[in-house]
Amino acid sequence: MFDDEEDIGFVICASCGARIKANRERCLRCEAPLVAWKKPELLPSWLQRLGGGTLVFGIVAVAALGVMVALYLDSRSSTSDDASRSVSRPRVTQPSDQNVASQSAVRTSGIEPVDFMDIRRGTADLSGDVASARVQYEDAAKKSPDDPELQNNLGLALERLNQIDAALVRFERATQLDPRNWEYHFNLAHSSSLRRGLDRAVSEYRIAADLMPTNYATHYNLGMTLRRKGDELSAIPVFQKGIEIAPTVAPFRLALGLSLEALGRTAEAQQEFQAYIDMVPGAPNADSVKSHLQSLSARSGS
Image (cartoon, rainbow, N blue to C red; front, side):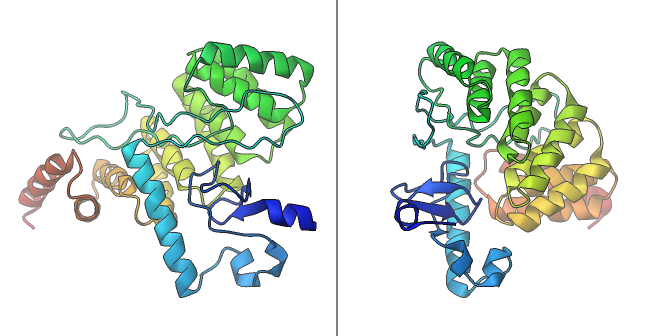
């Protein structure tokens, strides 16, 4: 499974399961600080099943999640890559355009949840000359047309160039070549939503969530896509699942509160709005949420 050389050179990210070089400080896939093990078969069965952890593991896991959230909120980006592919290609990292805003999201009294969570979705570095990167990926893809990573990275470059239809073709090809790779489905869902293909986006986000059930960004994006479709009833359990996975990620609370309010479940919505304020009292929209919560309380007499 792991020979001695691999055991020295690579670790497995405890947050998302990616296999990363041991000299990296952060996971290339989820950006979490590497909290990893080298021989999964030597771990206790409860840890392999992603169950509960010891106190030490729990503290480290919470700390890792906190760092991920801080990176997300501050729009920070790290530049790193994995050079283990046989085909020569640009070595770059996905830019930290943390949120891809959708202007059609439901808004209540000026309250706007984060429309989407964007995460590192490939090894493509598009922070520089994107057009040149696209050309390099196209040349590499011609030489290795059955390489799903090349198709995915080319799709990322095309998406950044706003060539969404062309990007969709590449992401679809990547999912065909490697249907068990969650990030290819994530990327296909993301591009589909940019083209208002909400049904396709929901379908692909659900596949991605099944493949990587602990990735909270996938659940959040799925919930927000359902909201954009006007399906608040389906969005609610998705947001609730996201809170179960990542209880410290505040945007889930606000989004869930808005969906609950839209369905007339005002008391439950108030609880979520209050939880959001308690978690991020200094958020830019905290005053708007407080004002809205006060308005709901006055109307309900509570």
